[in-house]
Amino acid sequence: MSTWRELTFPTNALKGTVIVIEDDRANILADPLRWLILETLGDGKSVAEISQTLEITDARVLYHLKKLAETGVVHLKEGETDPNEWRCSPAAGKIRVREDLLANNQVAEAMPIDVISQFNQAFREAAEGLYGSTFQTSVNHNRARLSEEQASEFGRRLLALIEEFFPPGKGDRSGIKYGFYGILTPIDLHPLGDTETEE
Image (cartoon, rainbow, N blue to C red; front, side, top):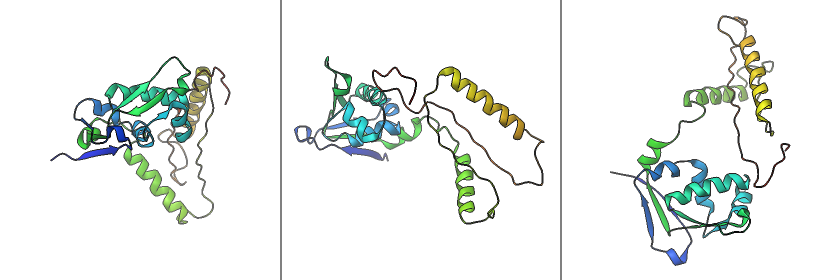
């Protein structure tokens, strides 16, 4: 028996209409940000309104709206005006997506589940005082606009540090075992029309 993920829109003109997704379009809807955009869509919003609501760039919103429009679950009214003013509206009063299709087609997560579990467990134990007050921990989340050359240089330097401190057989066997997991990835697109490289 199939289970469904459903989303209802407050669109009186389309009340009672349903779009059912049981095909490859589920791949597009499996993206968590696209589903969040649908959840915030209401009876329709502009690119700028969605961007402000979700605090992501308009270029990123527009990219995902175009993907959603490909599935037929939304209408994207482009026109000749500024893309920020393009409006997106639901194509039906309700969409239904087979849950097993969403689960089976999701792109692999960036961090493996077992790694996430290990780090979450370690942070819980640290908060409870398991390691005492002298052990070192560091959690950093940094954002900056980098050129391709800068990102490459950062990656090179980081790999050099990893090779120095984390290679097999090195380190202090009597010390505390530390874990490190690093991801350097673009997290948002430049705003539409923005050509600057500084944040």
